[in-house]
Image (cartoon, rainbow, N blue to C red; front, side):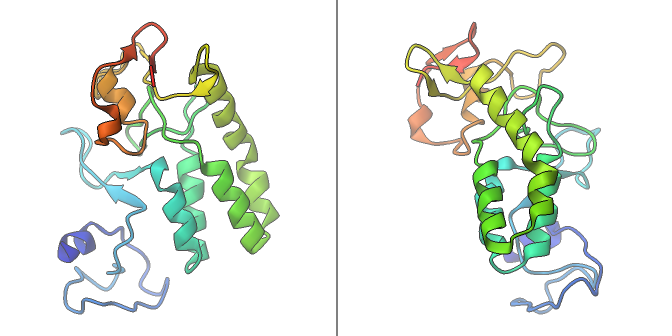
Amino acid sequence: MLRSLCLLRAPMPPAARPCPCPCPGLCPGPSYCPCPRPFTRYRGMHNDYPRTKAYSYTRMHTRRYIFALDEKAYAYSNFIQVVKSKTAAGFVPNFSSAGQKSVDRTEPAIGANVLLKLYNKFGDRWLVELLFDDLLDWHDWFVAFRVLQPAGLLCLGSNSVEGDSYENPNTMSSARLESGMDNSPSWDGEFFNTTTHQMGL
């Protein structure tokens, strides 16, 4: 498994950082850091989107913060890339790449909390100024589209988007993918409202 993770690791300049490699001999070349970091991953989703496209997952915000405890620059770079992939509708997508992004669903909106923690730790006001409006748009989108009535609680969902067929939008299965815990038994069953585009839980 470690070999597989190393092979999927994004290329970095050889001098980008020292390499405390725990697995000598497994790295595909000197331009790769061999230490696995599951924050942005490579995945080929369709034949016309090759494996070399990088997909960023918003569920990794917490892990980005944890990673920042050791490597601030890498965490900042990844965090900015994910937030700046915001869709035209105003939410940070479930995944994004140079060729495709989810347009029907997001992930738990914890990015603002991570930004606050990063600011409290490092004091970089420029990062707050760069991402504040995008994260506010994300929260506003949640209020507009993911508040379950009459309880007034945030919920999961998947919107129906014209022309989008990836992962069956506006279904229970796609709403599960917005949770960050895709295969949790919490989502067993069918309690999705195709009119409101929300999971009834």
